[in-house]
Image 1 (cartoon, rainbow, N blue to C red):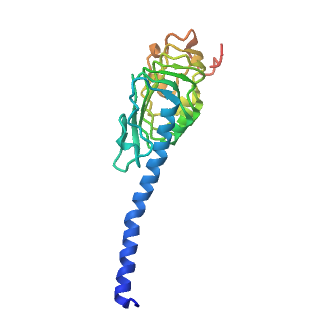
Image 2 (spheres, rainbow, N blue to C red):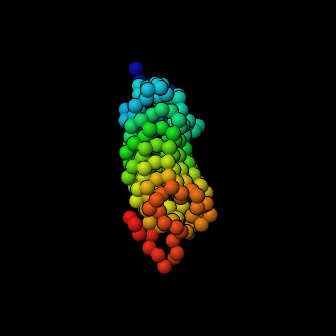
Image 3 (cartoon, rainbow, N blue to C red):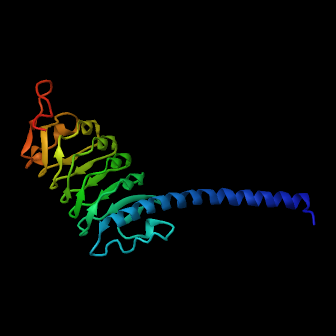
Length: 222
């Protein structure tokens, strides 16, 4: 039976309206799945004897129901709170996919290995707290891309190499603590470093005093 023209027009309008409503939701679900995949990759990369990641179920549509994960109203992950959680293992480059992440809290665990350069992709990041772990390697220069960063705490690890000068370009930085590592060279004295207490660089035996602009290189002893 042929549809009357008026009824057919109403049907087409209804279908178009439903598509407009559903499309954003599908986009959010896809983004949530992508972020869930990244977080589940972290779960697989760490040992979790205390079961704090037990709720991280990859079959769910969104990771926003997982414990220690906070999302915004659009269903995007904004916080990862896993400080002092008895985790061990390694950080993974997939964390760089959490493009709306503002707080990455993994302090006081037993995380080993290097800091992934991919964390430099987290343009919304406000706080990066990786202190009191067993991280090794250098501080990635890519962290200098974190234009929203306010808190950078990497103290009490086994990091080596110089302090990246790219960090001096982050005007929002208020707190930098890299004490108790094995860093070398000199301490930056420009940008946010101008107001950072010197004791935030203590217990780095090979780290020299603040650099003198034009008079000293920063890579001595490195």
